[in-house]
Length: 135
Image 1 (cartoon, rainbow, N blue to C red):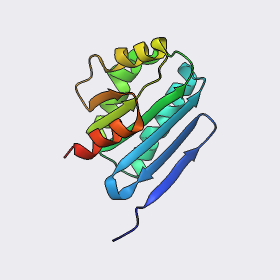
Image 2: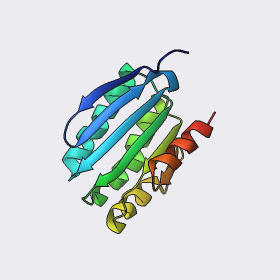
Image 3: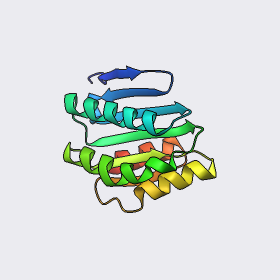
Image 4: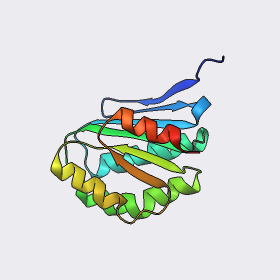
């Protein structure tokens, strides 16, 4: 049985991106304070990562984010999701924060998203199980 090929692509205090080539999964772990600038930069890093190492699934863990980013929710919904869908992402599991304002931003971002298929979760186990169940 081959060992999983997991590569850390970005490793900063506010964002860690890693790719599991065997399952074609991009894992994003967001931490701390984020604003429009840092969200746009993080999304750009995700797009660059997907360009180099195509994945059809994303596990986005935003459970450690402690700032509201509602002002960029429309951009995520209308632009970011469609860009990564064109890059081959089919399933996006998004783990949310327990903070109501942050969760609201996430819900706004996925409200009108048709591609990729985005689902919100409260924990990594549920998000991973959903991704593993996808074709």
